[in-house]
Image (cartoon, rainbow, N blue to C red; front, top):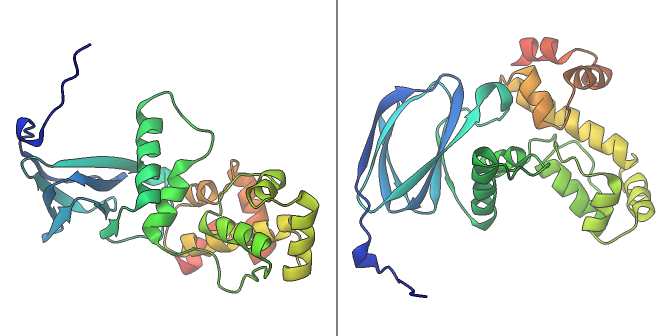
Length: 245
């Protein structure tokens, strides 16, 4: 078997230009994997460098030039399925965790390797760079229960069952449940529901569509989300969005 090793001098990637356009129904994330890209968003110029990415919300005019020996990867997020608080074009650093999630998102979007877990929710959480849950939500004080609560605040749509959450912090289900009741005054199920609906309220105030919000916070059926949201806030998600969005 002959092994061929490519050296840097033997690799040539030509430059590429994408003319200005507007994606009305798709959010775009431009991930700079190598080299640099000169980007224009709504008349403002930016330089994307390796290890960064630029979030471009749907409806913003943009175009770019990928420089020679550079690689940029566009990732697409349908507007009707995505609820996020990021309403402006934003540059983010692609650290180890986001790098892995973006690769997983690419694979699930372009192949039959599709994990049951929704990767997009975690991608959005890292792009937003802060939990979308209410600061008034009581947090557990014990190490294991707090780690679970922080994971659920990071991703309100986390679908792991109690057994899986307990296993992630190496305690029993009973120990985890008792800690939540003792340290927050709520069962884990009650705490999780409140976390979801309060995160949903933040997203609705940002103008996101009700169906997309339900999906983001972990509800497969929108009607179930509507019922739980109304029980907590006294109004439907649609009415809440109309009033505060």
